[in-house]
Length: 132
Image: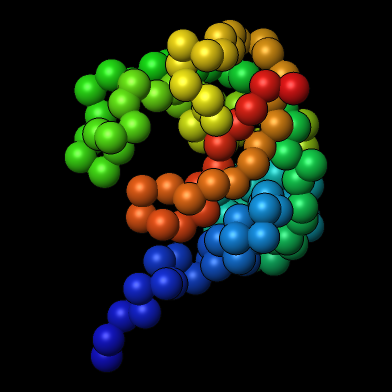
């Protein structure tokens, strides 16, 4: 049976469908209420098997950041670029790029940012953050 190249992870398909529309989706456990990201069908905290989909406002605080100068082949043309770990207001942490050139914008730990989606190196929408 041939693999559908558009379905990389069936548990995350709604996330990618949202990303294509500029919407950040995550899951919330119906048992213990934690926010779950990267989306999965089983809560990593309590093991419940029925987390529900939710939509994030996409705002958060920079937890960590780094600028990549020696990139892997898929990102080589974009180097140097900045990668952020962001604590979203809904209670989960995610990674994304900084939506500007490193020399144009300085982002430091504790800065407020908001998510947006733009095409990644594979043509699929990827999360990027911009300063608020």
